[in-house]
Amino acid sequence: MPIKHAQLRVYVHATEDEEKVLQSIKNSLPEEVLREAKITKETYHGHYGNPITVITVTINNPRLAEEALNYLLEKLGASGRLILSSSLEDRVDKGGSLFFRISKQDAYMGSITIYETDDVIRVSIGFSGKRKDAIQYYRRMLEGAEKRKKDS
Picture 1: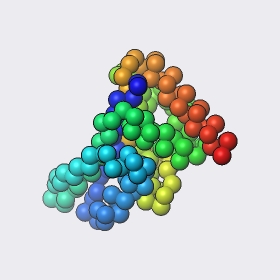
Picture 2: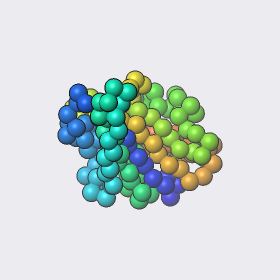
Picture 3: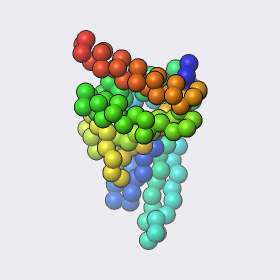
């Protein structure tokens, strides 16, 4: 299986409700994946001493990491998949890992949207193979998600 792992990371600022932010991540993944995922919390202090908590969800099981990616791609909607597809080459690093951001607020409300500002859940997908193979693989996954949505 070419996908090695997945990680979702979100920052919780002092003005935010940590439980709501955690729920936004939970809404972004299927139950089976959440049961097996490792969730960690680390607290840091900002420039003015304000607490900033970083919640990280790590999925080390390749099958579940792929399931998580499929889930996110299907929930994105056609416009989100188009955005991701058209910018895929910019989102895949030299090692084949895919990076994108989704709206923390929208995820809390149950939908997944690509979002490019700071109030986000950062998604990274680790790939086992060359960058060009990774791009082709992610493109096929996007096309598969689009086809499944059309068929349903």
